[in-house]
Image (tube, rainbow, N blue to C red):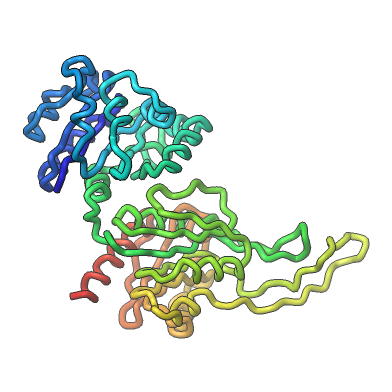
Length: 392
């Protein structure tokens, strides 16, 4: 394991950077901590020096060429916490302290990771998102931010990812490192005419959460999503946006081969034969004719090479019919697993929580009702164990 330049930004999450430094050093990395002036007000350079067995740096003027020396011979760069200010300076090439001059001196080809941490409103601000887009365009890889309570007492997207997740990402040692996953999410829109569509209530929360969890576990994730009002999940390699079931099928097949496929999208089973012109009210209620869409999960299960793990979702409103119908769908689609989820008040489509049963053809494992992010994490953990056991 080589050297990791750890740039610590000036936010309260700097205390988490201490644990990140310890975990990196424990894994064998030569950690080079550099603190911004703001970071030094939260944690001491001496703390990092004690944790990694080497001196921490904060002063641009202490050594004439320190920023060059720190940026050479690196395995990776990690900015944690990546505050709004620090990411803005990175995006625009500003270099007025040791941390930013060292970042600017890093040679091309060295992986750069950033773990954002800030108030949710600051993360959502257009200026921050524009800077994030610039950094991503230059190849900077983000891990987090997470959704949850922040130090300011508010909650939302902006919490710094946990040290173990950050460390696994930088080291490429997550349980799904080296694996490729394709995930579908959200609804499909099926055109009635040029201005009207048939859709469903899917928010995309579960599919996006699955994509995020798989990426956090180290997988290279391609997310194929229908129209949703959600931010792209952090850490995914690529997001492909579609509208119709036909477009989603094409995008999924184009993203193969993969080790894992998770069909979490609520895909239309039927699509109307679209009219070329707008249907006008004066014409009276339209008579719609439908055509059956191709089954995406079945197409993936029949692809060559086939993913090692194909997971389907099956939503039902009838609790008694949930498991029998889910079992039928698993067999008909050729999926390895089916996640049967009940749709009702507060759970399932359009809700933040889910109540699911995982069926693999042998067992039916019922999970307690939980947040969709927790469902996704549990599914990612189980997928990692499945692939590990399959390779043994």
